[in-house]
Length: 94
Image (cartoon, rainbow, N blue to C red; front, side):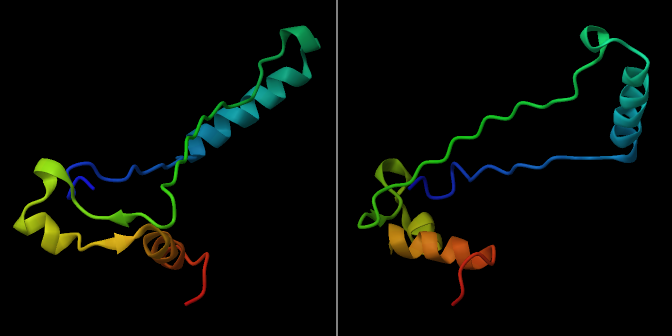
């Protein structure tokens, strides 16, 4: 809808050896402490997903609609775009 002006987000969690070592150290330290003195090992993540109705035609709109964006992002029904994304990440067979 924005002709590539706003792109989808990318989420990545990095779990390095340094992080793993720190977690193991905290676990070991916690063994020698009372429960109320132990460090808590938890992570909070908040994700928001939304989806447009399946029968909506997606295409660049407003000032985002120009010859270049219309060529790069041809009109596609929402249901077809969702199916393509699911195929691309191997969650739906062709």
